[in-house]
Length: 114
Length: 109
Image (cartoon, rainbow over all chains, first blue to last red; front, side):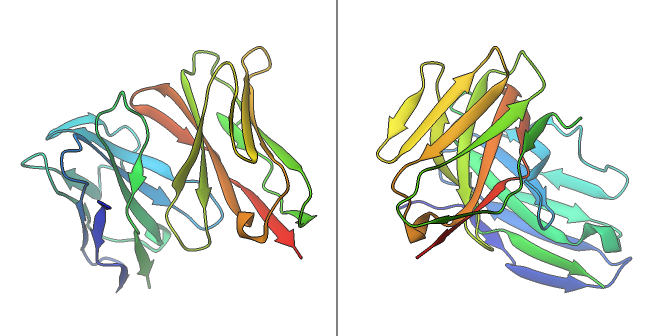
């Protein structure tokens, strides 16, 4: 069964450092999402891509966060500089297209900022 | 007021019981609704879509009440394996996606 891949699974960093997360969606899925999930809360959408284009990044803190999906396949989410409040699970999801709506999630990257 | 609200629980019910929880949403223009299940320290997985006419999948029934702006999930004959957090998801548009904070369910033997 095809899966969404994410790496690393765990990341510990010190505040003010840069971190990057990688996501490889299910092959053929045009839509890719990055979410942040704080413990005890639901996932919060940070950015949505349709192929290589950003559809929505209104919740992405653009002063420190950036995301790209250059070839419309895999994607990278970067934080620079990391802050203590960025500690969370970062989830990537994909779907065949935005209209399809069912999202398939990867296992996530758990970030701890010290 | 949050755009999507859920009772965080936890709901602690005995095996075999029926349990139901709701999810309210504030945007009357919301278009699509889903229930996801998330096990502890795992990723969310789709449980079922919620259709206007309601839908049933085995022991699970989902319903939509547009007039009162809520969706519901009913679990019959609950199993130990149903213990998880249940997240409702509301799409106001294809790119406006909001997850609820989740309802924790614990099934006891």
